[in-house]
Image 1 (cartoon, helix red, strand yellow):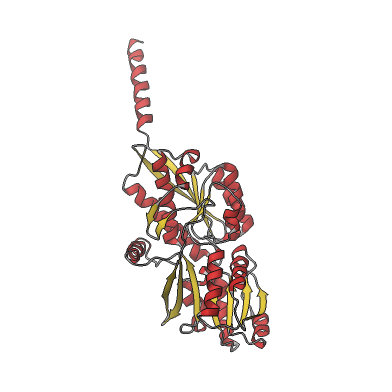
Image 2 (cartoon, one colour; image 1 turned 90 degrees about the vertical axis):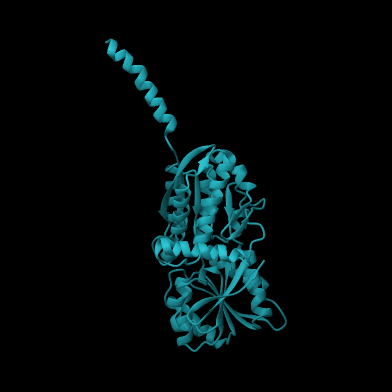
Length: 378
């Protein structure tokens, strides 16, 4: 009995010591389309988040002087709004301390209410629909320019730089597609400029014969498409097959490396103009190039589109936690609101709505089977 009583205080002491030294695990949720037509973009996003988490853990990231371990929990939203809200609830139930995502505006916007109700901060690396931040949720942020700037800039460029006069507009009926197309139409104005047609398809369509045949009769010199590359690529192929010789324009959804494969010979030489939400100039170009090289080495694939913005989103969230000396969303949210972080995609600061300040756009075209940078617009 005497032997046992001596062991009890020792066991308690060891238990307390183990508890004190236990490494805090911080759960970061990621949501995007890991299946379906946009799976290549969703996987790109997931890899960006995975790379950030791996690097944070490798360097022994400290919060309040203690080493923490980040754990990435990924859910597949299939780019579907209903599935998006379901996986948002799963992440809430998993007690994540922050969410990076979603990729598409159509999933980001409905999911944001679930995160807001649970008090979990959310940073979208790619959603451009203005409604996302207009809802007034204190924990909703994005690191790319929204559709007002994206569609508006493309509309002006189509008229002033490309000289478009007869413009046809097609969107995929998603929140993103309709949003960017709507902003494009608002800005595509000038002497002699006419919107000759407004058509729509779906984000899962593969046959555009009826729409394109109707457009051909209206002789557009430019076709604007609001949607993603999985639809935009085949659409370009079918435009070529029908002999529609119009220029093609779209937002970041069609501004991907995958367009080269998806559009095939329909891509043409310098015939497509697209804009990516984001962009760097000067010394920052090397920083982004170095990231792309590290990404290629780690995953053996090139960056598709949003991976650098996902990477920065994770880093921004981690920095806010470090500044707050806590991973508790209530405590680090105020730090997120006033963050000033130099990421691989440039300086990240948020305005009072949660939109990135001074968001840039990069215009691209495709030449020689490669995506070619044209210019960065602030």
